[in-house]
Each structure stands twice: as C-alpha cells, then as structure tokens.
Amino acid sequence: MTRTPAEVARIALSCLDLTSLNDSDGQAQVAALCERAAATASRGAVAAVCVWPRLARFARAQAPHQVAVAAVANFPDGSSDVQRALRDTAEIVQAGAQEVDLVLPYRSLLAGDLNACQRVLEAVRRASEGLILKVILESGELREPGFIEQAARLALDAGADFLKTSTGKTSVSATPRAAQLMLRTIANDARSRGRVGFKASGGIRSVADAALYLELVADQLGAEALVPARFRIGASALLNEIEIALGAA
Image (cartoon, rainbow, N blue to C red; front, side):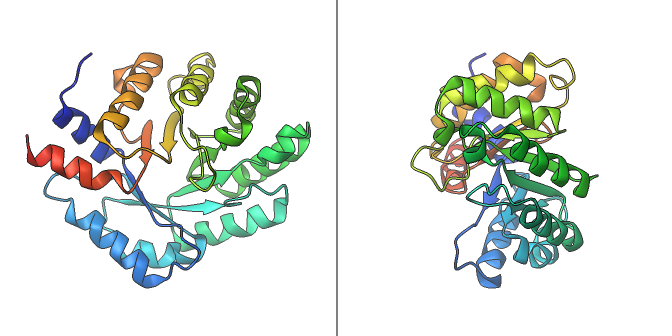
C-alpha cells in the first residue's frame, strides 16, 4: 500500500517514543521532553516518553496523561548481572511507569551463554508483570542473521511484548535487514504474531525512513499492527520532520 508522507507522518507520530537518555540528563531535560510531547497534542499524542529509571517518577508527573512513560533497564551495555537489571526494573515499577525497555545481554549471546540471557529476561519479565516489556536486541552488534533470530526467539520465549532493534548508543542502530529478521521471527511464532510488537530505534531521521519501517511491519504483521500497541519508533529527531509533513498536508 502506498501512503502519502502525511499519512506516514500521522502513523509515525502516534507510534513515536520521544527519548532522552544522555548521561547528564536531569529533571530539566525530562521536563523539556514532556513539554515537547504535550506540544504535539493538536496533531495527536505521541506514544511514550523514554527516560532513565531515576527520572521515571518525575516523567510520570510531567508527561501528558495520554502519553506513557517508559524507562530503560540494563542500559546501554546489556550486562548479564541479573540484580542490576532487577534494581532498574524495581525503580521503574515503583515510579509508576508503564513500560520497560530492557537490553538483552547480547555479549553473552555472542559468547554462547544463552542461560545468562534467559536469566535476565525471565527475572525482569517476572518483576515487571503488568507493564509492557520491550527487549532491545542491539541488532547492530549481533550483526549475523542467526544471532538476531536467536535473540528474538529468546525474548519471545521470555514473554516480551515488543522486540526493539537498538539502544542508539552503538555505531549501527536500526536497519531494514534486522527489522525483517525480527518481524519474521514474530510472524512465525504462533504465540506472538497477533500480540507482540516491533520497535525500530536509532538512525530514523526522516518521514521516508519511517515509511520503510511502516511497510516492513505491515508486510509481516499486517496493517492492523500499525498502532502504538504493536509498533513504535524510537527517534526523537524525527518529530520535527513529522510536523513539517503534517504542516504541509
């Protein structure tokens, strides 16, 4: 299906996770992020704002009521330290946030230690019951299709609600090839294909970039998956381009 730039922009806006994950972030940066989210209200709400666990409670107080708060766990390095991941998750849960973006221990996966991955995934899934769990595979570091598919299956088996490409902190972020592999893994899993979503994160800067991922999701999961419950884009810089496209509509 061919969509106009304005149609793509409307979908992308509703599925956008506005993100601020700089090491120096404090309340001022999160307040600005939430103000930016509120400023889109005349055109439609973004899906979520995504912040550090230490700032999740503040974000909940500042974000518009229709915008979810997500926070990262085990970020950005994807440690195999279960207790560290659980500390992050507990802080997110206690803050009243609705979503956890968890980095899978991808270095452990590359080293063949699948048990380390499973321990972190399963522990965080239990600790975040009732919250949306997005598992970041860091596909640019996994590189090989076999590793990406293996990571995706581990996340699905642990009960992930979304598969997410990247932290945005490495040299390679979202790519169409990685997205295809992740989406195909979801589509081929009978337990997941009607429930689990996909998030493309990092390096998506234009409405044309967003359109590519929209089409990949629609092709593998159906057009009905182009909603915030099944599709997200982690790309704060994209918002300006979305607003330009909608302004020209």
